[in-house]
Length: 73
Length: 551
Image (cartoon, rainbow over all chains, first blue to last red; front, side):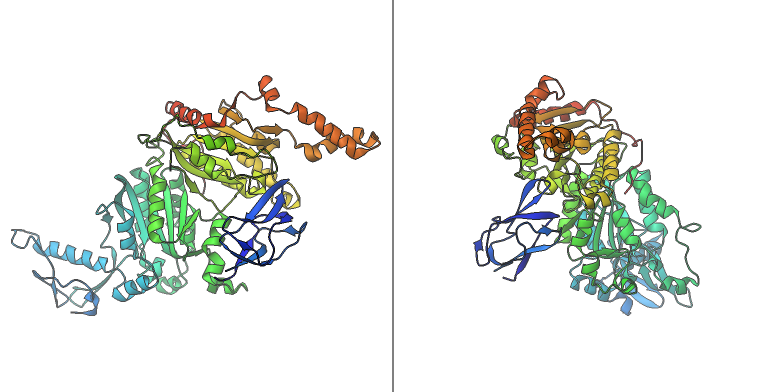
């Protein structure tokens, strides 16, 4: 399956990175936890696959629409 | 046979001589005595020519592009066989030297009445196979009469839009020999109906294909707009945009992700069939016009049903988010929630649903987006949605979890506060019955705007209710500055104050003072909101809204 970018859907700060490149994930698994308005907002895998890349680090500010991870086949 | 009739059915029957050509027409009434046989034959011939639309080649091209023709679209949208067309034989014709009809091309605007779920509607559609839907082949009065028919006969209108939606092209300058003043003498009334009908009848607009200019305006000036994911919508298309230095494809410029996230279009679907199904479903919740009340169905879901999952719906940890859509699904009539505008203003979820068979407008916070904080776009979404509810007499149920307005520099730059007080004004101006369920947070001005402020609404707080003028975090530093500064250990002092305040903020203390009238077991929600919907029966009043809704 083609690589699929995972986007942040809001402006936030990266709180926790729950997976590493190479990890197998199921649809709905939490990849990264963002923080916004004091809330923890999980970003979950849009489908099953292997994490190809994590494009952010903890405490980094991310914007709406920014690619934060790549999910491979 | 001339090329003109290529692709039409081979028909037998009475010969009809037109322009020296022998044309066959099927007539079952062949043997019937008639004074007007020749005229009837000509009428049927002209209707048949109109049904050929832009000709076999253009129809094939439409199908090759994965799109239906406008006549196929209408047939699949409405109840089988219910379409009654107005002005089918309007178009442009050529005649030979004997003034016999030589060729005929129908107008690219097709309209008439039909039924959807047995209820009459007006349907108007652009025929892209005729001159790409552009104005020079439209006959300006056709789409205009469709809008008038909807207004005068108080019928919902469905606009099927493709191309420029009857808008002009630069070619018009050459064909007319002059430049058109948009909205000039005799040209403004169409623009009147495009927006004025929003305060009269439900308008559904479907963008199927490339939609630009006036077409885009007719798509956006609706209560519910849809596009297929292969369609694109823009004010001006790629060749025009290239002249301002942006080299973009149709999809990059106005594809479904752009237009649903921007809020210009409410919903995108994979197929035209899905678009028709969404249009029918949207209309099922609404009255045919503002002069009627929304149609009640026999409820097939127990109004007293108590969903056990609701006791686990809200996490104890206030920093954790939860999914609000399953909560809505658990309390409205089973399967009745119909979301609108899911990709825009996402801290707020809006849609239509039924409670004990009665259509209601549902608004809910989505903590996945800024914890449910009101952003500028969420506020725009609220304004449009509560205006829709007010226009069509839908009681509002608001499932609220609002920690306030979005804060920070970007939020200030977006004029969040002005959009916020505008949303508050829209809520305050409603007269439809209102019921708010406080799921969790209610903070600040945005928290205050959870029901119309000047009249009594029903309000229930869940056990998870949590509120205040300001959140403690940051709020303590502001309010207890002197006390914290004077302390030897500022951090310890802050923690001590926070602990002190937290002990006082139990929702029961608020209820004890009657600052909130009721705290409920979440499982009581459905019985209570169904009761609210039944109580609303007596309060809904048909008629135009005190202020006409804007797109």
